[in-house]
Image (tube, rainbow, N blue to C red; front, top):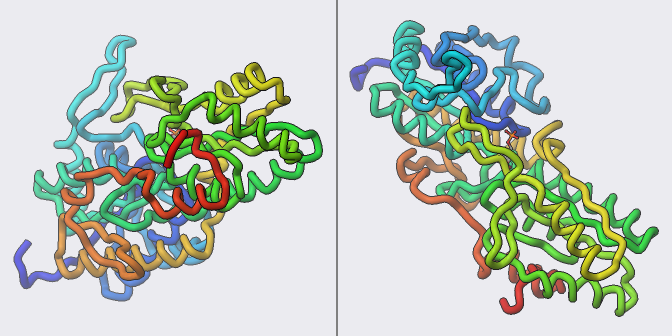
Length: 368
Ligand code: F6P
């Protein structure tokens, strides 16, 4: 489309795993879009809807009253990558490139731009669709907070809130029964949820994927707490945490997904080993999808609204191929290809890790 032509019609989709705040972004995009005379098409179930032609018109009434609602009114999928499209061929799952279908519907629906809300997987797909001539604007979402280009993704604060509340609850039962309580939290290959949730909940030990732990340091920590008269411990374990010279625990593999690995199970392994090697009574809890459900926190509602409003402004100003990002307390834009260049991981020098050390939290490592 020419430089002087105004955009008239946008599409919006939510890709990958859901999280609180998606509806707040949809509202933040659609309300100003309508006010600017644009029509909005809601694509269903992430990129799946773009490949299969599933979409609905989104009117003002559809995006009213959804700010505080968890999940996504559009549906989502983490199996709908147009470039990695699974199909059952004679009982066997085969992978195809269906990106031409995506372009076909984008053109047929008369879209001038597409707002793609998602994590790193969604941004990788968005970059490739951009190369095929689609005008994409990205909005970063994930409870994992593992996108380098933005200080925060929405959904993370809500997940951390759930973890911290869960740890508060584990504290009371742990202290009553003088037990070690292990809590496994999400985050994939990044430890941000475990780090921030563990810090907020006052965990005694936090185990992160980025800092492989030493079993003996872990055992010493929970035993020493007992000796010092604190007869319970809380161990917050990221699903991607692994011991030194060990591997991440994989729950399942699903080739239909772009990343087939599903992590999970380290919490149980940690709990069993603590019990076996220290004699302390130990229980484990896997928090799972509770971290992704429910209403967004006020922080996430505000961030999501700002992201949505800035995303539609980028589209109106034809800054395609960009993603909105939080830098300090300002919303800025970054090129999608730069946004996906690097994953944001915890480093031992991170201020939250340092603060944890300072208040006596063990990361299962011998030195800082
Ligand atoms: O990326 C978000 C996330 O919740 C990860 O923390 C977790 O590993 C994964 O998605 C779980 O995916 P699923 O909902 O497919 O089980």
